[in-house]
Image (cartoon, rainbow over the protein chains, first blue to last red):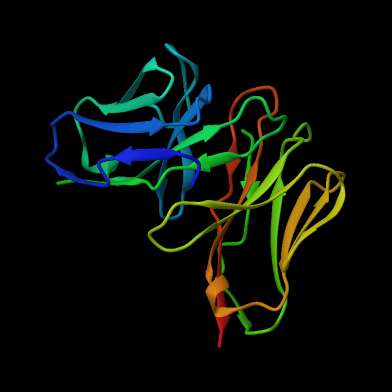
Amino acid sequence: DAGITQSPRHKVTETGTPVTLRCHQTENHRYMYWYRQDPGHGLRLIHYSYGVKDTDKGEVSDGYSVSRSKTEDFLLTLESATSSQTSVYFCAIRDPDRARSPLHFGNGTRLTVT
Amino acid sequence: QKEVEQNSGPLSVPEGAIASLNCTYSDRGSQSFFWYRQYSGKSPELIMSIYSNGDKEDGRFTAQLNKASQYVSLLIRDSQPSDSATYLCAVGPSGTYKYIFGTGTRLKVLA
């Protein structure tokens, strides 16, 4: 594995509660990504980061916020969880020093909002 | 809207046969292309990268790229039941930092 740890691995929460997912990397890579994966939709980008405190929105960013205060940690927060945010969330990193490099994924967090 | 299209399958092949997985993309400026394998309940795992027109071989896997036709394919020779998984096609950033993924093709290799 590419040194990416996601926590928690599983989470069940109630509608309206805040939830924070954590992605931790040991590769010292500048680029980090959050995706969600749902049947029929594939992997969809929520937010990404290209450096400490540098983040940008993906295609499904509504209802999500992110923070990157250290190179190794990228946090995804659902301010007020909804049932539509039940999904599997993957963090990914990219090595910027390799031209046209691929993404490498963490093990994922399965989130259920009841 | 940049897109990557894949047939969702399932694609069923007998053990020992060649499995052929296909992908088309919309952004002509794309320069990097990837195939990931994803077992049920697991995370995507990179199996092939390809950047130039033509074929790239790695063991039983061959990736093929045709930029003029905006087409990428993955061939799996001597398919094994352990190859049964969903295969995701991805296109690397073109002018942004964003990678675009197809919805995946589910492959079933029948013993």
